[in-house]
Image (tube, rainbow, N blue to C red):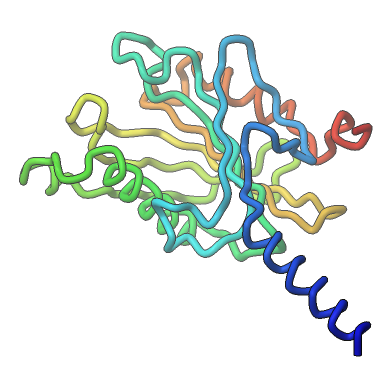
Length: 211
């Protein structure tokens, strides 16, 4: 009887710990390698995403911001990339990418503006369009498209051009979705910066395996 009570206590304690243990993007060590260039900033948080709960994935989002991404006068304004490190093998195609990014940016605008938007701003709905293109590097698939939305920093319309790369990290049963975004056309030098992040990506992080 005492053994049964002890076992139940352990199970309850373990369940309580798992519920209370929160993801900390500042201390989390990724099992993959995604470079952090000099003067770039990062942000990491769990998926499902708080501001876009309709995106039905589980995993981690890992963002890379260019030094000028939030500076309207910079050529790097709104130029950044984010990686989704997802559990399992979710189906991903041009339709799911478009739907997910529509939900993502709709939620992002809402959380950054709240009730302060004018009626005209509320009518600036997010429009996303993506298509499959020639696969790059070791991609399972590569997509290009646009996100048309309200720039919540300047409160006016903006079009973000985007590349989306899909890759599998089979050893960990993970799917990687890497998003590159910039209002500059694909011929602009910003895309070399974003592309280099993906070129240097690896499913294995040797530093993590040493720790």
